[in-house]
Image (cartoon, rainbow, N blue to C red; front, side):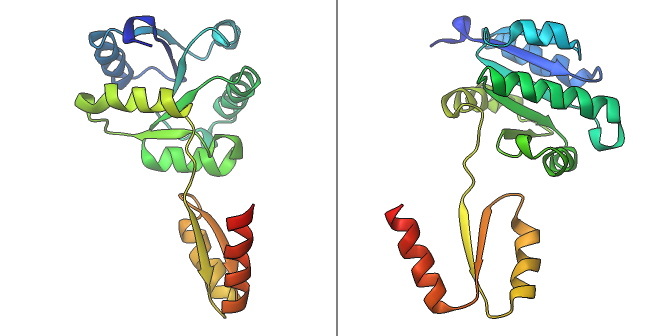
Length: 180
């Protein structure tokens, strides 16, 4: 696959100058880029026909129920057609959306500001991985379950976290994971 054959659709819920910059950079790299607003029928028309969707979030959608509904419908369409997608936005906006819409938790994220010189590499990596991220796993071993749960809440967004309360449980857990 080369850039000229790669079709990327950028979906922006609210217009942003940053999207123009991303689109211009992708055009410079010879990707075929289409920019869409929150026009659900048009987004649906592209599902199954493009290589990658980029969902740009210029604000927290948890504060706007219309935007949240739109993102939920976009997610439904993208997942139904097994499309690749990445999320772009401020780190805190992406964290908010991942908490409120668990289906978006596994999509790769490009936090703003984006290093435009690395955008092409980021896109190729997203295309190779399907736009999804397999989170690394962490096993917390602590005899204080309340403390372990508190630590889990700190890192749960970035890692798959499991908790056990003793050494024997940890050995059993790791052994079971190795054989499954």
